[in-house]
Image (cartoon, rainbow, N blue to C red; front, side):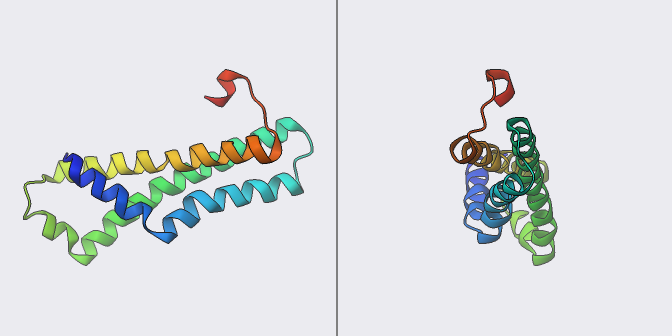
Amino acid sequence: MSLRFLALEIRRVTRSPRFMIFTVAFPVLLFLLYVSLFAKQPAEKAVLMVSMTAFGAMTAAMFTGTRVALERAAGWQRQLRLTPLSGAGYLTAKATTGMTLALAPAIFVPLVALVAEGVSLDGAGWV
């Protein structure tokens, strides 16, 4: 896996408005909506926070997986075969990109939950 290719992939994906909307803004907005509609107790808010964090992380992973198929259809993988990057390196970089981008909702949803809704957990609960 090439670190330069990994950095390129992360930059490409984070520049996509679709990524930012569906993996960062959407889980945060859903959390705020569901808390205002359904959660009356602090424990319910914490459950919704964890649920929306998991939703955002899964969306980031699925978004990365679909990009592999779209890039193959567009011929991008054929272009990459002309470079020294191996096929395994390409897939490793894609998987690492997905895991790295899953950190965005894992950071922003709990941050909004803490600041906007006052969700408080013990140290082990946040991890």
